[in-house]
Amino acid sequence: ISWSIKETASSSSTSLDGRDSSLQKGSSSNAALPKQVSSYSLSSLFKGRNKLPSLQSLSDALSDTGVKNYAPELRRPKAEYKDYSSDWSPKDTVRRMQRGKVCSLERFRSLQDKLVLLDEAVAGHDGNVITAVLIFLKRTLRREILFRELEVRQVALCHLIHFLKETGEQKMLLDLLRFLDRTEEVALSQYREHLNIQDVEKKREFLKGCIGLPFPPEDISHIQDHYTLLERQIIIEANDRRLETAGQSEIFQKYPRKASILNMPLVTTLFYSCFYHYTEAEGTFSSPTNLKKTFKIPDKQYVLTALAARAKLRAWEDVDALFTTKNWLGYTKKKAPIGFHRVVEILQRNNAPVQVLQEYVRLVEDVETRLNLATKYKCHDVVIDTYRDLKDRIQLMAYKCKVERGSAEEEKINSILNN
Image (cartoon, rainbow, N blue to C red; front, side):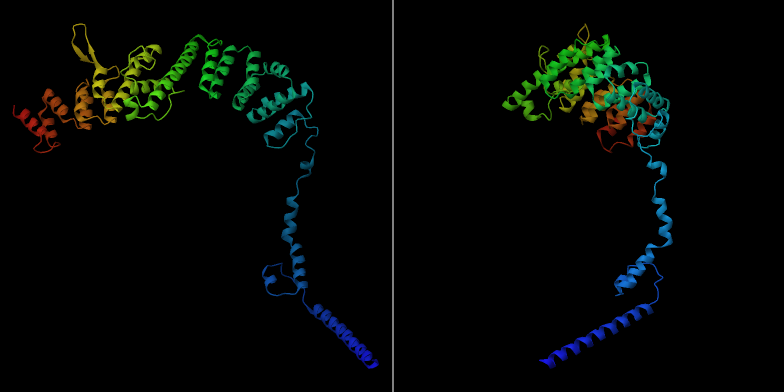
């Protein structure tokens, strides 16, 4: 037992001596290491360096002169640390706002200070600043006081009216216009509310109430027409939906409706009626002639719309009847209030056959326009007859080269040239 104790003590003292010697060697080796001069790099982390040199290089990197030069630039100027609610004058506040600086307007508590601030904003001619000040006044002043002061400041007043329209604050806008006694603008602003009503029955009742608003005389008829048109559209839509669902109308089966007629413009409604209800009697609400008479649609607009609708259906007989008139002696004559050159263009756009196009190209009065249209749409007979009437043999011979050899057109040209 004593031997083992002595052996253990001797081994422990030996290990302690070895540890001290190793520490001395480590310290001497560390002291022998040269001081790191290079900056901190990621590559040194992956080369198995000792911890101490790595820490030394990191401290060297932090003490680098480039970082020292850059760090002071991150500091904000002392003026920036000044409290935003400090004693800025109205003029200085407006200037700071124009430069995009954050400014607190809460320090302007008296009415006089707020009005001076508004006047300075107007004098700065910056719409954004004026609007920002108006929002502050709108929040902190009673409406009566704000309206009274803006009445004598027209620039600020215009900015506020525009702001209220853009943000949709309809109630305050109406109150402001009533205070200013702008009755016509009040009526117009109230009428615009129909755009926000989705239900057609509610919209119809709303438009009915708008008829009594103080509109200018020239606008009253438009409001009445809007109400009447929506009322007609509701009736037509209900009837056509029933016919389409029941399958009782051939035209609805052949050409199904792609959209509802509700809330459509007058011209679209007229086109719809000319497309689906062209042959109906004038006494029905969906009749095109009834719409023309009720809303006083001009002849040119009616003919253009009806022509486009019937040509789309390729109803050429209806197109012909649209331009055929009778005089008091019973003679028929074709007449177009829009000009036959436009009739030809609309027919060609709807892929009318050449025979139909030729009939209306002949009716174009201007010779040059007629020749251009006939050449463009290959109405050979019209070109040949026009050159024949002009007795222009040179043009006939030149046009002969443009038609097919052995065709009826070439034979017609040869016959004219020989005679």
